[in-house]
Length: 292
Image (cartoon, rainbow, N blue to C red; front, side, top):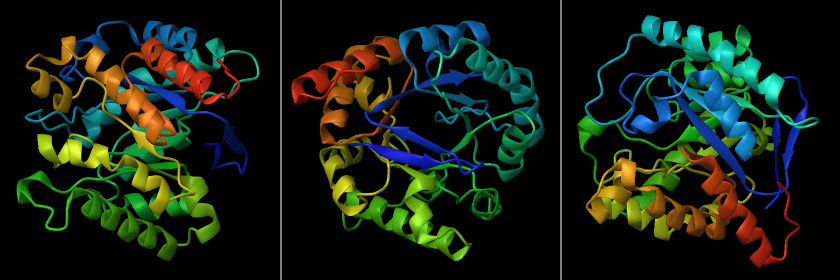
């Protein structure tokens, strides 16, 4: 389904097919070691050759049990890596194609620095605006495209009395109302915010699959908002299959295929080539014109 994102400069980024967002980790402890083995510029260039549409850079591992990272350390890691990523994207992107660079952070201070000083285009917030009270006000003020992921503080061990889909839906509705109250017009909300159901965050194995079974409902309840799905090599795959992240590519591809069929607009992935193949095959099956 086509969608558009309104950029900070009031330019419009349009997509006529599902997009692949490649993950660049600049952390020493990401749950998937394969995402942090290559030099950053080489990894970006490889993803672009494979057809990545967006590059997402993170410096704070959110895997269970990961060490806390201060804002200063997060900025130090991004200061080293993000300008290299932006430069590599600008140099290697196919002619005429705009490749957004997204920063994966829940801190407004970090997001502001990455966008205003280092050329980042989007912000990807795993907390959906709940970890830093300054994040949503800054997003509203700056006009930066924003990926709002669902999460509950894991220490609360919250259940979903009305089902996990209802809980995620209610979270999005509440946070979108907050952004509107901060000055983002109703018309612009759906062109500024991308929704991410947050697979693997504050959900057990059964809840993750219950949420996945209901994925198409997001396109009914939030029809104008792009939907991002991030399941790449996550524990909901390898725990079910009795393996590990290194051996979860096949399961990832299965879920990517089903996600695109259910209406996902963006796949956030470690393996760009395989995700692009999913989208091209799905386009061919549906009769859409296949574009690289």
